Length: 150
Image (cartoon, rainbow, N blue to C red; front, side):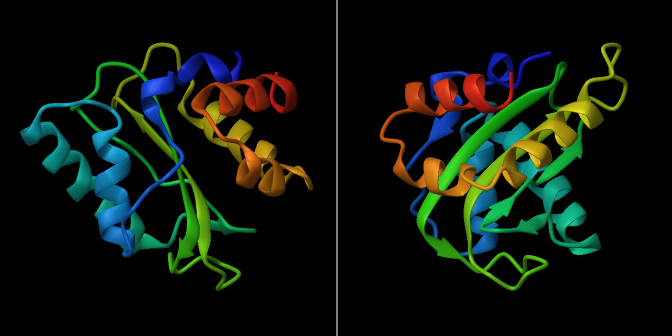
């Protein structure tokens, strides 16, 4: 299982424009290219998950995640907010990099938790935050994943 294989260039945005946590979640959900009703359901599910505790894991990284019937397979998206936004992260620092993970409630491949763990591990690599800040295209993001999370 390679992280890169779960992303497409269309599911990567290097210039998120939102200035609030809720709007950022909406922007990330939009990267999955779902219909409007599915986007609304997914947003509400992610909000409920965030109310349980922030998915901001520190070092400028958040990994919002949930299970939802609006997807029929594991779906991922990545967004970068160069200015950062308050995400109520565990280290109280602004979040710049967001990895969205959505999986169906019953997933035959059972990749949801392993992928979540792999992204957390990738994010903990000391030079990843700086590398993420310097990439200039979705293709560079995919190459970084290939290099650091094979």
